[in-house]
View (cartoon, one colour):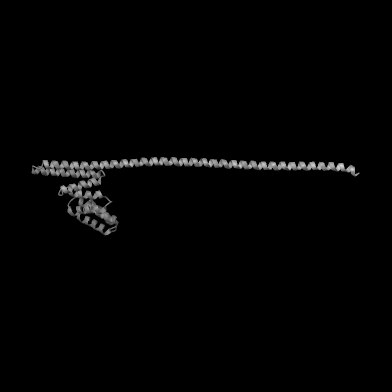
Length: 253
């Protein structure tokens, strides 16, 4: 009996062993499949990351190229602007030099004419007056053209040669104007000369008004009021007096 059952048990054991082996193989295949899927996902992730890195690198390269191009363009534009400024400076220097030379030539010409006409007293006086007017007009033209330094030198030379000319108060006044607001003390000194030395001139009222306005700008209300009141008292019908009244009224004085 036992001998008959043994082969059956052996066959059963082999059958069961075969089933177990197939199950192990199946599990192994599933594990391999899972591992392969994981590897594929990791490869895909790495590929995506690599693509992002390459794209970022490309954007960085493009940005650096754009910045470099902008810097080169800015440098070129800056150099161009610097060249233009230097060119303008040279032009101004050239014009100033020409103006100075022209003024010197005019002085020499006027002096020569004066010497030629010095034989007759009336003629000499007429020549002197003509020379004074021409020198004054030349200096005034320089001021109007925006060359205050050249104009100032011309007016001073004019006052040295023709201190009693009719244009003397105008020359003093315009010297004050040539200083502008950059050196108000120097301007005020010349305006004061106009008001004190030539009170009967047409420029005296303007000089006083300028002095009052400058004092007002400097917040010296006492001095400003004094100049305005002096202007109104001495030149009550002048346009400058009307302006001075408005300034005092605006300040409640």
